[in-house]
Image (cartoon, rainbow, N blue to C red; front, side):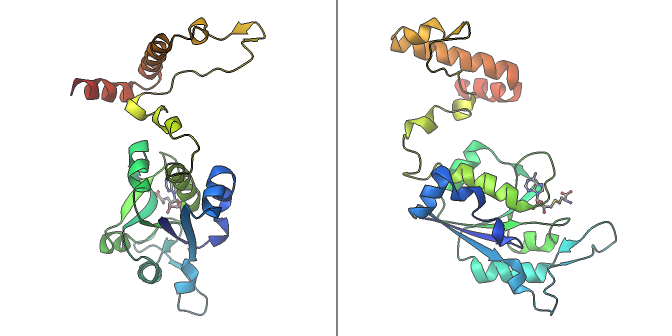
Length: 230
Ligand code: SAH
């Protein structure tokens, strides 16, 4: 079972939306374990301070390495330590898959202007970003990453096939989907999908995937072409 340690100064943000829907059921059924640890519990001074001003000057506050270090060593037993950070590698579905195969993840959620760089070096921490924009805290990023990870855990999604056909599998975006009614406000579902011809439907879907990816995500399309060659 995947065990997740979240290091945060806002433990009340967890499980957050992970407590609802499919991930909520997975949590209830112990398909993964989520422990939100309050970093402040590892502050030793009477004000329980977790941050201080940046050395060299500048705006904002930085999370202290001594407090964070104690929080890490008291809670991490094995596996990766991740810092949610706009400076990290952008999260991809293949990274999500990799994380879903781990036994333990320890995730540091930054606040203020971030954390002292020495923590990242000392604990060999992997930095992961959820996109090129700045959030107020790592908690939101951690929840999004975990939502993507948890849905890949065994037994969480009803239909395993539904993850194999999705956007980013094969480096292609998903084909367009339709359901009943067949006619809606003068628009009909593409004829081919009603034909019952399995092979033709598959071919049409693949061709739609390729066309959409080529237009919307030329970067992904390039990777798709390269992976087909090899
Ligand atoms: N001064 C920092 C941003 C701090 S934002 C910089 O310019 O890089 C405060 C915290 O929010 C960060 O420590 C990080 O944990 C989190 N955060 C902000 N944007 C993020 C993103 N795109 N992905 C992951 N975490 C993010």
